[in-house]
Image: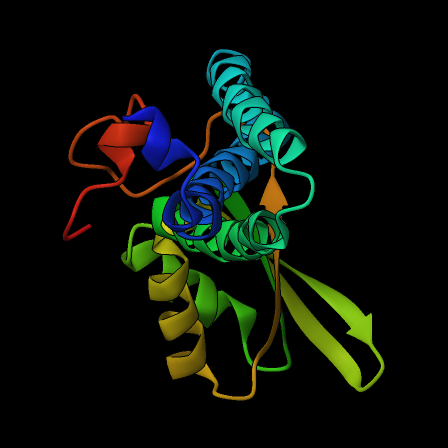
Amino acid sequence: MAPDFLQSDLYLYGVLPLLIFFARICDVTIGTLRIIYVSKGQRRIAPILGFFEVFIWIVAISQIMKNLNNFACYFGYAAGFATGNYIGMLVEERLAFGKVLVRVFSTDNGADLVQILNASGFGATSFQAQGAQGEVSIIYSVINRKNLPEVQNLLLNFNPNLFYVVEDIRKVNKGIFQATAQPKISIFERWRKGK
């Protein structure tokens, strides 16, 4: 770029804040993914994401430090942070990485629900317990997170007023899980259109 353009008002108050805005979107989105991979114990990809997150952040913050009297850069930085959080959540939701525990509390026959889940390819275990309103069946099922909407539909078809809780799980050893078409190896293979 020509030195005159880099000193122009168009660059300083238009292009530079936009560049900072997009840089913050990238680094905050990467940061969201890094936190998810750290919480899931993914030691290989988390440091790589951390490198790119901090590298982009340093580039963005250095431009703000060079232009401390330019409030448009501050606005671009803050707006990029907010937008990056939103996009990071969308990306994380789209990846649906990991496994979750679905814990169901049912006053209906828990054995029937276990059969429905098993017939759909989901492992489930139930046992009887005493709740505030009498006997309940507690059903546990550990599933791939991407299958959560399907399991929720099964639960709500069984009983629309069913009480259930979904929790993230860090590690799982063995179990019954729906077969996947192909193993997912990297973040880029997990996020494809149509899945």
